[in-house]
Image 1 (cartoon, helix red, strand yellow):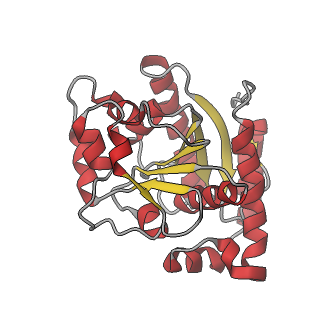
Image 2 (tube, rainbow, N blue to C red):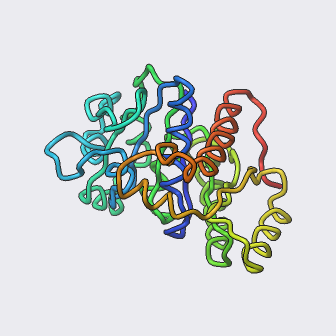
Length: 260
């Protein structure tokens, strides 16, 4: 099953908004999407209209159980959309960062093994290159790195790609770099400079169009809604997510572009 992990070492780059935007775009196409919130902050969980404090099974329970297919017991239907389901997160998931037991890298992959009925699985990784990110990478078929046009975020891209190389070599040989999403693009000179830099370094691995900086994204997050629900204000961003969703669906073919 196509399983895409979204990541960057740096926080605040719009990783969760990208996952939610693409999930909503896929949902509008009538596809079934499973979102896995692998960030203890649980932003995706809340954006999907779920409460991380509810007494229900979550991704931490699934990883801790170390049982094949157990993630199916933690799936909840999102509070909006038609075909979006979620394996929610909780602050307790942070405890998994210190789990160095043998084989612990495979626990999320094991929990998702056998879960079926979805066209795409999207994993929202935490802003780090630690143990939780490794769990996500081992479970994934592809990695999408989300960056913003800033020097710190671009350094995070390089670190994430090194982590992806290590995971692909030692734990998950099928793991490919799908692409790099540029988020929060604006019309400043600094933004243009950094966008040109990432395009020069990573070439065809950089996905277009870029996601523009718009206040409607924060509004949608606060309301636990899709940007497409905001009419003309949300349309420019929703159209970008539609295009990025097409890039995700294209990963189902064997030709995936790797960064040189």
